[in-house]
Length: 207
Image 1 (cartoon, one colour):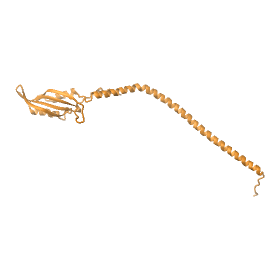
Image 2 (tube, helix red, strand yellow):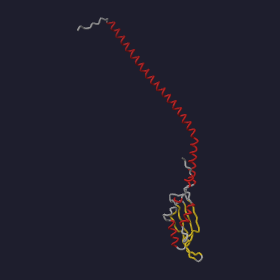
Image 3 (cartoon, one colour):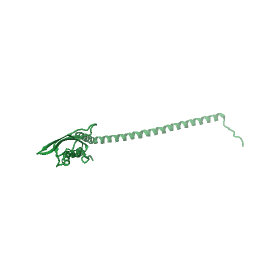
Image 4 (cartoon, rainbow, N blue to C red):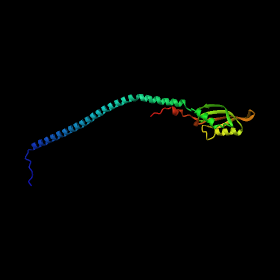
């Protein structure tokens, strides 16, 4: 194979190399500018999308504000309801079902051997030292000591959960129409079973 012989003058070769370098630099510059333009348009597109999302969110926020404004009367109504329930619970805290309790006294006491002649009731708010919700002081008579003892046992029996912790303050002998009797004074405490359910009955149900 015969060697290649460059017939171009050395000066023309140098100029050709120079033009090639210029063309390469121009190409690189154009590529760089194109890359910058691409990045710019990408960022601009994201900025536009972000602005559109922001506008959409602002519209949604305004709609939510309108909804909140429309629902505010219901919020106030709910707050009034909750405040009313709290006041009702405070007013009826420790409320005793006195009617039921007195009916139980008449039902549980023997109508033949022991009878009540005096009755005093009071309501208390329980404290840590005591779980009693009230107390009952009663006095009466019976025909014999076992009758009074039976009534005292009835007050503390599991059949009557509303009362308990009963004790006899005094037991004395006496007579009625020449018949021997035993006078007694008993005190008992009221448990939570004596409480009424008026709070539940008076609290309106919210669907």
